[in-house]
Image 1 (tube, rainbow, N blue to C red):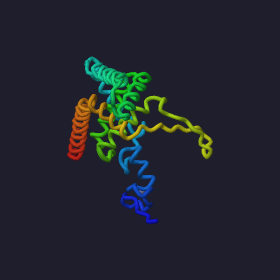
Image 2: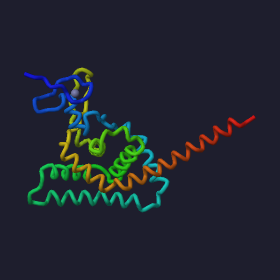
Image 3: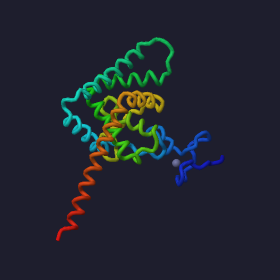
Image 4: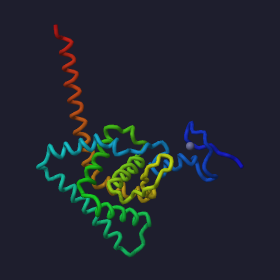
Length: 220
Ligand SMILES: [Zn+2]
């Protein structure tokens, strides 16, 4: 039997099967995270960006934008409901994506979905290197949004640590792609705009800092 090497540079393991280009580790990461070298974005990674979104909402409390965005999520859930009611032929993964959206909309307030999605878009703009591809970004977006409910977590007991652990039930890559597309269509534009505002403010702070340093060096 011939062992082909995993396609990932520097991996060195052999491909998981005759038909696979990757070893089992990289194959699993591609499936779970959307790229062979994509790290999972955790709740902790996302937290500073979530704070930015919440601060922006507080600062613009009177803006009707936020309720519009809540309504967009509700419309997406309605769309999912009508897809599930449809009796005709439809790809299975699309039905699965629709079920996921409904499950979330039953369990999580719209604003939480909106905030998390916007936070991911801001993160994508401000720290682009965190995401290895667009597909990887959307996969992470869907993972974080699904992580807002415990419904997707199955717990198991880890004998080694003696603690109960949680593992999220994975969505198939195709279903995740559909759900990621829906979220991006609903919130991507606003997310980009908010990211630009953050960028402008960060640049301004940096210039002020530089001006202070410059004037300090002039002091006698
Ligand atoms: Zn590998």
